[in-house]
Amino acid sequence: GQQVMQIPQYQHVQEGEDFTTYCNSSTTLSNIQWYKQRPGGHPVFLIQLVKSGEVKKQKRLTFQFGEAKKNSSLHITATQTTDVGTYFCAGPTSGTYKYIFGTGTRLKVLA
Amino acid sequence: DAGVIQSPRHEVTEMGQEVTLRCKPISGHDYLFWYRQTMMRGLELLIYFNNNVPIDDSGMPEDRFSAKMPNASFSTLKIQPSEPRDSAVYFCASSTLSYEQYFGPGTRLTVT
Image (cartoon, rainbow over all chains, first blue to last red):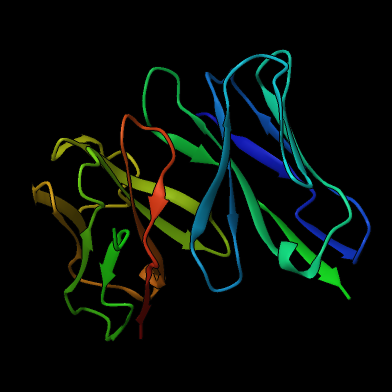
């Protein structure tokens, strides 16, 4: 079945450093979503990308959808302690609204 | 809007007991999803509904799990009988036209 993998699994950075997480799907995706889950919290939607090669920015966060629509990345510039949490990508199974969540990247920011 | 509401927030039960988790989606949302999150398996989709009708239940672990959505404002996930390996955080999420999913706070289930 469809698999969505993320790397790295964990990342510790010093506050102010940049951070990137990569998402790879075993199948082509019609779109990809990104979520953030704070420790002890629930996933919160960040963004959806639809077009091949699409790049979207939200303040210090930059999201990119690969040309082949099988991979995506999230880059955070100058991390802050508020960025701590687990970042998930999610892609729909072909022809359905069933989203498969990636394995997640847990970010820890050291002050 | 109050967002997606789940109850109870925490549930501790003994093996063999029946457990019922409840969810109230955001008004107007026509998709409802049940997820389970564990350290080992991550965030797994168990079942999802569209307009109160179950569309895909392929993620339901086994016959001990069942889910219903009797109306647009209420859904339940039932485990009978419960087992220790069912211990997890169960999330309910809702969306419209399958765009962004709004997750509830989750129910942390512990089966001893």
